[in-house]
Length: 87
Image (cartoon, rainbow, N blue to C red):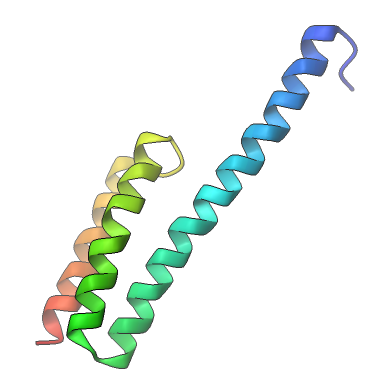
């Protein structure tokens, strides 16, 4: 349990950051799910536009420290190859 004023403030900051990070992670997952659903439906145009919307969101997650750079690159690469395969 936090006793000193500094540790109490740290606990408050951690709670606030955790909530922000959770919201960002959830938002990224939503964008990725939209791409997955578009791929599953077989509509290449819809999948392509969903992927273009998801890419900056994923990279924003990288810059904010939510997702590792290589993880984001891997996800984008795999999704783009699946979208390309729809043609």
